[in-house]
Image (cartoon, rainbow, N blue to C red; front, side, top):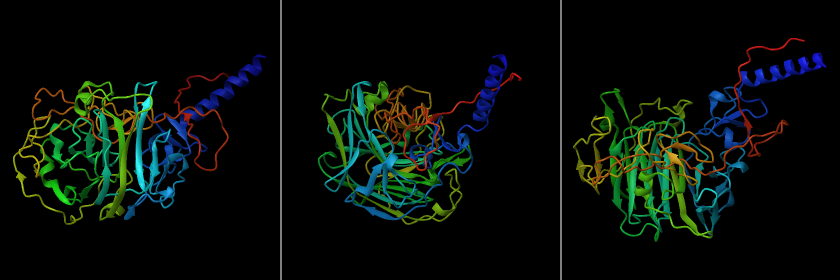
Length: 449
């Protein structure tokens, strides 16, 4: 018995050591948030953690940009992530959380938020384009879900790899306004967000929202009119000696989430609170179409999503009202000078930026509690996953105490958390939502036979 027991211990130690040597196995090669599996939820570029995966080729490679016009007339225009096989030509968008709260209905992509009684808040969704983009023009025709306080709708271009982001956001307490924002490496900057009048209730009618992004500038447009311009040259930070301008390979995404019941005071004040719920309440964001026009940069982007190009910019619209004054950001450095036809002098800035663990605020973007930039960004799938924003604290013009926390747009929480997979049989294609828990264990001594 002693020899058998010693043999068992030695064999077990070898298995554990193998697990420690390579975080994931060849049958579940892709790592995400401490779990391993072989499906798109784990292997898709931007979600997969290459450093903890089986090897350097386990994560799916980023798909190059593809100019496209998506009208959501076909079921393949948006599918659940667990139905995605990695071929970007098989689907235009994937819904990255389970259960899936995105559907195509009557020629629209409908993003839904339902009530999660166990969490006592809304469970939303995020969809992302299967191709990546690094510079181009993206237009989404949207009717927001801002019919009640706390409901947040978002249209974003984001790199989950490095934390760059460009976005539009709508909050339930201000249905007649849209907020524009940008992030560089998930950094918290109070003055990066601005408010703009939509010209009516954004949840009552469709409007065209456009982001024109090139190596030198970003232009935000509403119904074909430029409402804000950010020039790269104005984002230079003398302290770090770098341009804090979003330039990384990214994905186009849309999301809906519950900001009013986030549990973070600043986020709730920003979105409006509480979000009204009954057991049967469903909030819906409608997307009639999305067009993507690629330009430059993408083919030479590095695998980590950073910008290795210095290509000249594409032409973009200009804005008449120019704000050439510098506004101080959090660290006292002057922030980017921008052109904004709806605000001058940065006086209409709302709180946005990541929490970066410096302020309370649990901004979330996709399903329920998702965050896209800044602090508390620990999880990217399910649960209380935050990938980028969230927890952003940014005072608006009337708030000088820094208490107005505002999440950035992308990462959805309240999506399903990958769970441990006890089945050791290999799978031939990505299908299972379950994941194998990755553990690193140090062996100090192994019993000898």
